[in-house]
Amino acid sequence: MLRRTHRGIGRLPYENIALVLQGGGALGAYQAGVYQALCEAEIEPNWVAGISIGAINAAIIAGNAPDERIPALRGFWEGITAPQGGLIGGAFDSYEPPAHGTDWRRWVNGTHAAAALFGGAPGFFAPRLPPPYLHPPGCREATSYYDTSALRATLLSFVDFDRINHETSPRLSLGAVNVRSGNFVYFDSRTDTIIPEHVMASGALPPGFPGVEIEGELYWDGGIVSNTPLQWVVQDRPMRDTIAFQVDLWSAQGQLPRDLPEVAMRQKEIQYSSRTRANTDTFMQIQRLRVALRNVLKQVPPEILATPDGQVLARAANDTVFRIVHLIYRSRQFESDSKDYEFSRRSMREHWESGLLDAVRTLRDPAALERPSADTCLATYDLARGDER
Image 1 (cartoon, rainbow, N blue to C red):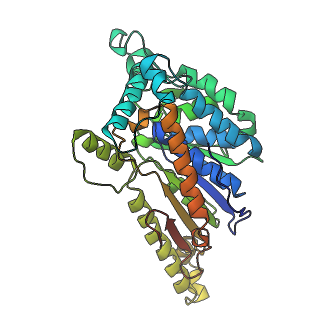
Image 2 (cartoon, helix red, strand yellow):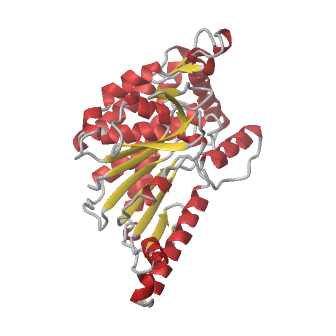
Image 3 (cartoon, rainbow, N blue to C red):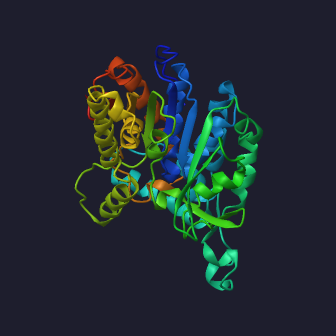
């Protein structure tokens, strides 16, 4: 990984500094690059929320001392992208393919994705043998194509769960879905004792990965319902001035597809982006209503504010400040619908470097971190759009 030096920023004018990490499989190395840039800028989140691969990255960050987080992230990502051996698994990692955007590079990436599809990723998941169709219905082995038991040992080697559950550590929130009820839930270090199973549950995407049982209930990947944990952060009570670095691995906006592989990739991007921009816009509308209500209530007589209805309105109104900084991975031309399970060492390093560079460029713009005005109490920033709203 190449280190990009940039100015240290240090303490920001917010009570909450949240790092919000979306799901996206092998693309998650992009999030590690973003965190490296934050770390080099001396910005340390006090709240990390993640779903799926974002939950794993979040646990590694929260479960290590500040100076050990980047080495732990690097160890995890280099471990699960270790060469598998043979032509497909190892030869292309040491070979420099032609320029990006060529059909050759797409084919090389496809061979690596095939290696993961048929051989798994070391320390993460492995094909279930015999396959699930040969197991009797009702048993765990019949419900998924891959065995993720190795992930538990990997988490224990890179995450100190005692540290996560200590009150001085950054708050950790992990999104999952209760299989029985279909309800979205968050495991939160404020209310739960976080263990490896909570992290694994957040990333248990069916039918590839099996559900994870916790206290008698079975859980699947939170991305089934919502792939971005921003809502959990902005709805927290009591509300506090917050800057949220929202790191998305799927872009809601993209180009028109030219062939079937690009159709499949665009379908994934739309599905797993969870309408990120729409969700942010909805929150912005709600926040504007809260600010308008705050302004109106200043003109309401005290005797009306003392009524039950007045008290309800007073609780809804607030002047809490929110800044949302979007960092969104944009696919390269040679990537296809298999990019989220293409676990090659080369692609991992490219994703990491992309996250690092995007975050460095964002942090170099003072407008990205500026506290919103008291009139609006909310602002967003998106490097790719080059705008602030």
